[in-house]
Length: 131
Image (cartoon, rainbow, N blue to C red; front, side):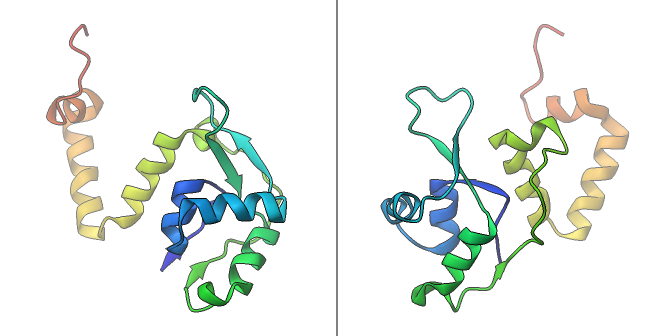
């Protein structure tokens, strides 16, 4: 099952629906989809696409995409519940957690409780050396 997040990069949406990035960019222009710049990326070309009901409807009406099983989230006003919502890394972490099995999630929980954040980061070999 494919999941559409509330905001996605062109590449993420292209991967999700099995299309080329150029096709997604063409749809953005033709359909006047709402986008926003990705913070911290220079040049202004990297953008996040707001996955609005109009975008979902367009995707579901495209002949090639009708067969895809897309999780269409309930439409609600966009509101960043957490400051991390616009951070691509945060979304990537959420995606990884969503793909984990229940057993893997439980083992990760036990590891975090036992080791804490610093122990977890040390195991990943990304701990801050100066701390």
